[in-house]
Image 1 (cartoon, helix red, strand yellow):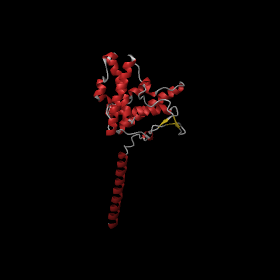
Image 2 (tube, rainbow, N blue to C red; image 1 turned 90 degrees about the horizontal axis):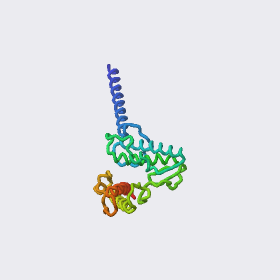
Image 3 (tube, rainbow, N blue to C red; image 1 turned 135 degrees about the horizontal axis):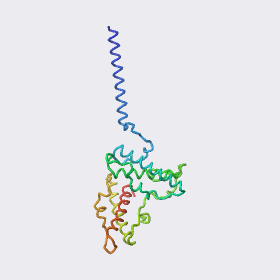
Length: 233
């Protein structure tokens, strides 16, 4: 009887230890995101917040789309500005409102799109801003990473030279100012939520021409200025 009792106690201890190990393993899996299609490609990307699913989905969709466009361009024997692609501009492929903030999704998507596109041409875009070939040697980026104040890289919707120039300059100046403020605070906002972006009339004068056309240029400049300010330009 004593022997049977001892065996039961030993069996109980073994069972308890097994359960503890199982619970520990589950906790580890949960802490690591449940192994939900973890992709090592995204480890080197910045984390600006948002859910795991939002970041993972956006990076995956952006990279795949950029890579696809890069392959198509390479097959045609050309390389254009990745920012001109509608998929990059929209940056909403694969997005669902359940994932969370749409503008944050677009930010991740565009970053991955750029890398996917450049990878097809043997260019590795690094987080430190350097561009390197497949051997790891630093190279000049043949397609600029940002438009900055190069107004030639912005769209042309008509209107006079003065209207376009004034609007882009005013919008960019205001956008980069707000972007730098948010960078210092460690925050990120939808650039469209700013009053200056919504009004889009800073420095406007009726002598320049069409007001709505001015606002369109202004908003282009503001969006890019905010992005540059947020990213340390």
